[in-house]
Length: 81
Image (cartoon, rainbow, N blue to C red):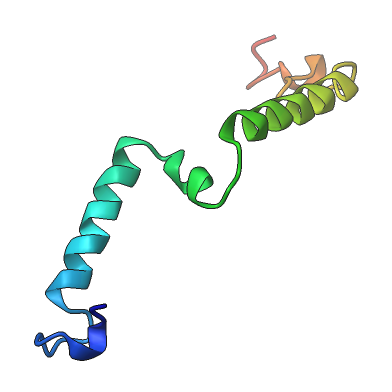
């Protein structure tokens, strides 16, 4: 087995490790869900749970006025209305 200790390259991160990291980066750019696969996480299940939580929060707040809604009292800008 080859390890960084017996690599003839003197750099802390030898060209072999750098090449492997570059290859991993390219694969991750092609499919970011590989990150979850490497961690043993089912990405479809993760997305389903995240969407379900988001929908639940949206439904709980559906009747509340948000901060981005302009109130009628705020419509009088520069005395125009």
